[in-house]
Structure formats: structure tokens, C-alpha cells
Image (tube, rainbow, N blue to C red; front, side, top):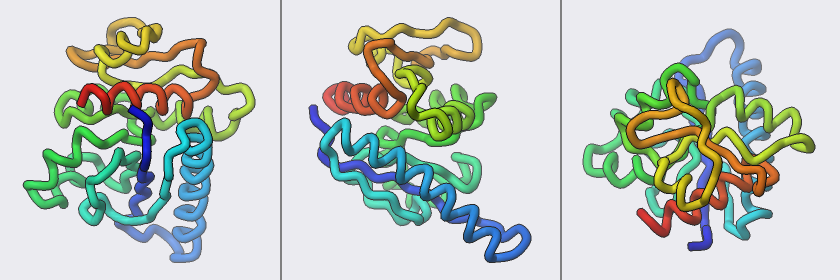
Length: 186
């Protein structure tokens, strides 16, 4: 299934630390990084990609959501109406996830996928040298993609694994192909 639409939701800061000007600059920098990622995803998929600064609780769950939270995911989700939570979670790709918590979050909330914070940073500073690896997703979807799955331990849980494949030239391309297959099997 081709992606038609995708939302990148960059939550604004929940706390102001230091000057408002400094916080505004930091938020604009985050939005610029995610906009660049969205541009790549759009080029590769033909999808309409919008980048918005809003809280998850304000989002319409009518397309996949790439979410950069400004709080821990459980707190972010708890702000949503209860009937919206079950509709949202299978559509969310968590961006900038903490490596030490990523598998627990994926398993607990049954999200579509996640991109670890350092992996996103690598992509953002070395786009020209990027490779198609480092997506945390559903193992059965990775198998359908015939992707290389990376080891056990912290890189695998009951349902999720981190994977990549040399056939994909970048993290955005890997994500696009993954979401196409994921949405077909949702």
C-alpha cells in the first residue's frame, strides 16, 4: 500500500527552561531537522508530508504519525482521550526514542515503529553517507521486507526488533518501505 499522507508531529516544550527566545530557537531547530526528514520521506513515497508543532492530544488519527514528544511517551499518551489512544498507537512511529526504553515502550503500547535518538542524529548530520538500517519495528513486517534483523538482547523483544537492509539507501527509505508493508498488514 502506497503512503498517501503522513504527519510529523513535533510537540512544543512543556516547560520553559531559560529564555523564551532560546526555547523558540531550539524548537525551530527540531522542526527543521524533522522537516528535512519529511522532505526525504515525501520524495521517496510521493506522500503528502506535513510537519506540525502540536501536542499528540490535538492530532487527527487519519494517517501515520511520526511523533517527537516533549515528555515521556506514557505521559503524552495519557493526555489523549481514552477512545483516541487505541486508534493512535498503531499509527505512531516514535522519533528520537531513548535507546534504554525503546523496546519497553514499543511492547507496552504496540506502536508501529520507532527511531532511536542517536540514529536520527546520525541521519541528520550524515545524510550523504546514510544507510538503510536502524529502524525498530514489528519483526513480522521486517521478515516480510526480507530485511536483515539485528541480534538479540536489547535489540529484540517478543514482537519488535531493530533492523535494516543494504537494499535501502537511507533511513527514510527504510521507513517508507516498512510503513507501506505495515499498513497493508494493519
